[in-house]
Image (tube, rainbow, N blue to C red; front, side, top):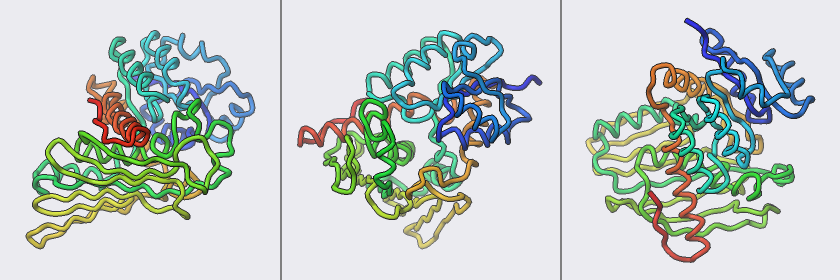
Length: 342
């Protein structure tokens, strides 16, 4: 069977776990070219991973033998790159977030749908064993009806992180802690408990950082079935703590903390899973984690394209996280409860 051929676009910080994953999957996947405009960055990437590099972006899109592109560039560049991929008939695996505004995020999904290409999003934490086990428990009805669903993301980023050009700006990143860090856990919450119907929130920039966007958010969530919950997200919690999701059901309570799941049922039984992850991104080093989850995500994306099925994390899935984030920020600005767009 011919190998699945991938072009990589963007060789910055986010490329490391992807490159390691692609090397692990070399029996199925061939990296045809890895693009960056910087010659120094291309040289560093080629030396580290032994993969072919190029400074010609047009050549990547015009190569008819490339099945898909993996886009790892800053968020503000995503829409135009996805449109180019769609025009050339290439499937896309896109680093989160979709883009810097809800309108551009929706345009990405629309462009992929119109072109009939597969669009997968890099929410690798969906592949944690603890998350998969919890989703199975929910599908079986083991927790009963969900009456409470809350999320907490307590990360730490020093000022040096935000001193990097573009970090935490609307122009390049589209936002602060919600769109850049907490979006992973927000996506998990939505995938497990559903999209909240309305929110009330405060989003501020704390005295710990000099930055354009929010680094501290507190909010309340209300779901269509009447369930309620809270959201807390920050990059000001030194030295950084594992993210946490709490689901309260009529038959028990599940706590997902980092990659660990603990469930207590009303009948006295218990269930636990997880503990395989290598590090987290909660502290000062945003890349302090292994690449196993990225490998699982890339493998799923290749399977999805090959088998003609949707990927585990689609563009439509990612739009839900964007909708919740937008509602939280709108509520903070208006001082009122805001409905979450669907």
